[in-house]
Amino acid sequence: KEEHFKKVVSHAKEYGFIFGSSEIYDGLNAVYDYAQNGVLLKNNIREYWWKSMVQMHQNIVGLDAAILMHPTTWKASGHVDAFNDPLIDNKDSKKRYRADVLVEDYAEKLHQKALKEIEKAKKRFGDAFDEAQFVETNERVIRYRTQQKEIVQRLAKSLEKEDLADVKALIEELEIADPLTGSKNWTDVKQFNLMFGTKLGASADKATDLYLRPETAQGIFVNFLNVQKTGRMKIPFGIAQTGKAFRNEIVARQFIFRMREFEQMEMQYFVRPGDELKWYEYWKEVRYNWHLSLGLGKENYRFHDHEKLAHYANAATDIEFDFPFGFKELEGIHSRTDFDLKAHEEFSGKKLQFFDPELNKSYVPYVIETSIGLDRMFLAVFSRALEEETLEDGSTRLVLKIPAVIAPTKAAVLPLIKKDGLPEIAEKIIEELQWDFQVSYDEKDAIGKRYRRQDAIGTPFCITVDHDTKTDNKVTIRHRDSMNQERVAIENLSEIIGKQVAI
Ligand code: ATP
Image 1 (tube, rainbow, N blue to C red):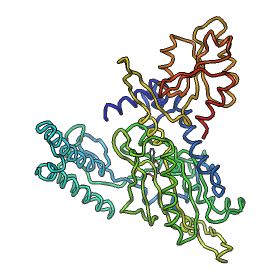
Image 2 (image 1 turned 120 degrees about the horizontal axis):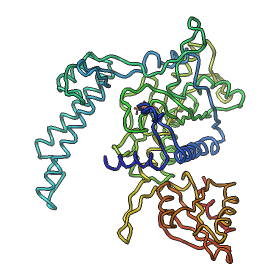
Image 3 (image 1 turned 90 degrees about the vertical axis):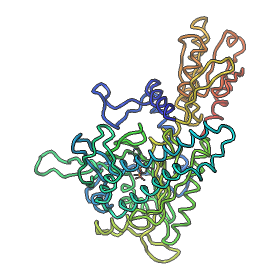
Image 4 (image 1 turned 60 degrees about the horizontal axis):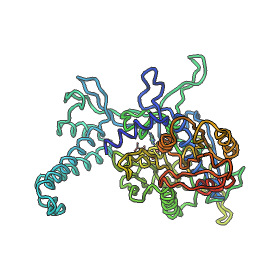
């Protein structure tokens, strides 16, 4: 898995999907740029989400709120007081870590130790090895697993109670060392706010302190009544938005999984108080099916229901995905009650209520939220799509099996050779197709090499123009995944491609 992850990162760079930000200056930690192919894939994922949420639901409308918001927004939402991570510094190395991550990594090590024992036993006993029985009876495996569970539980309890002294005590008891230097000389654990601050206004004395939004959701809440009134929306209804969010993450690792500047795709669904859990179940299912519709494999998704709930929620689950570093949160579905709208009522002094003609009364609606990271979805798609295939003749090919609907380039048009009028025919095909599809032209190198290049960037179709094309008006269309080739009429190309890539 680790190997695969390395390949994912290097492939993303080598084939023009993702570069580190401002690389010529050695980059900026956990900030990334999407390159020529990456931006296409990212746009397509966003569009796939947008269509399924906004276009396909008559009672969901879109919004594009500003990144900068009135600073009181973040007081009302609780971010100023509570959007913190527990931090710890090592006194010797002066390195800073997230205290909870240090402990979690330690627990993970115990898990790995247990797995190693099992692997060893497998080697020793061969085919006759009964794994389940071994796990039950092997003392060492039991010890590692119990210890791991106890640590995770104690950490969760301390974090819930904001008992930072106990988190420190745990780090000391486990004798956790600085992963880089081995030093065990730690400071106390402190809370660190994850919001980026900035200033509005030029003169130093009058400038207002602002934050870059750490989530897009609040732009939806503060616009709730504006949209409801001007759109004459009736409950239940939703507001959807995609856009940048910023978090000063302490532990920024795992490539685009945890970034400091990232993009969210969120939808807030406003419902009658009391109906929220019904809609929560509804959106769990709808969002799960959205993921399955892309065909990345059902086995790569699972729900993780939260036992410990945030202060604003009465039910919450994550849709987790099997990333190259294991199952991790991809999307959150939260029943946020009326917490946000009530808080904004309180801080703004404005009513944020809906008059329900059926009930003949006004109320502050409850909210179900679906929130997915666009970059995480990109990583999910990209890491599952990348395959190194061994072909029948023993050679290998690198292929990105990105679902055709979101593939960056839909078709490449390739003249077999650079002369005899073939490039001109290819150009004409491009001129037709580019109205509807992202297509590209390539005439360099042998045809097999060009196919491989397109495989590596996930292009589902290669269209080859050869000498026969001049007389029969037909081309060869090659399918990326099966590598099958068929001869089709030029005039049918648009329909053939359209069928496969339509959202
Ligand atoms: P995590 O626990 O992984 O930090 P979170 O629970 O803080 O995530 P939410 O606040 O629920 O995340 O944000 C909703 C979604 O936004 C997440 O499911 C994730 O896909 C995405 N997201 C959150 N933080 C980041 C980040 N730093 N980089 C990329 N995507 C992110």
